[in-house]
Image 1 (cartoon, rainbow, N blue to C red):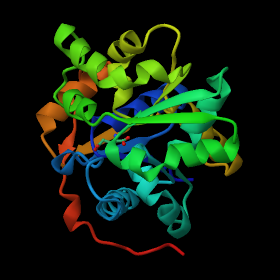
Image 2: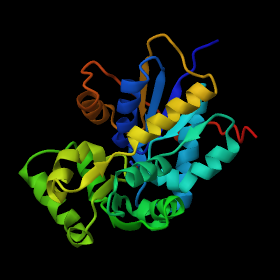
Image 3: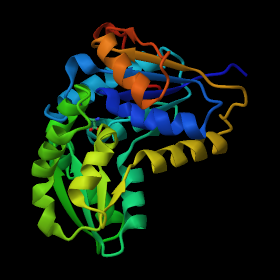
Length: 273
Ligand code: DGL
């Protein structure tokens, strides 16, 4: 059987948090990643626009003959997951259900915080998903779109960053949460500063871990897993240099390279079904 890659898509470098987890746990899989940096941030755009962009990324990846698609973006998961799942014949995995499951497994006092983009918070996707899994849970959402800008500029460490993160997360102080979901795939790149801001009594949840568990299960169930060492191809719609700098650091792969692509010209093949 021909080896087919798994596709990962995000508005930017945030999706690399899923790629990092997947490379660690599924080293035999070929992976292809697209980051739509040219049109970032998604989190401040209307859901209909995010859905349109998500389809363009999905079409680009479909032309790479992917065997499964990971929507490595919470904003795009909230806006486009049901649509993509209904219309594509390959498995499509989002991050909100995995993040919710992981949060409910982590919390002891059933008070969970979610930090995410404005779009994800306004969609109420996390609070609805967690309420469906456990009606007793109390979810406090906070939009933190500034973190996306900081991370894309590779501002992740130092006192100035810590001061901003402390200020932005200040509203969570009174919420009595014991668990905080990093509900934007960019945010695990700021883990140190976020953990310092909320203190050691709050456990951070990175939905990537549970999402890759789900991906692994799907690959096994559908007999899609492969056994020879995997490769990684990276594409961005924005600056290659800016993308490569963060990707090389975050994936600890100094020789990693990316290519620029224009996905707006991507042919739309329409639904598989
Ligand atoms: N990484 C994306 C997410 O998980 C959003 C970043 C953006 O606003 O573009 O929601």
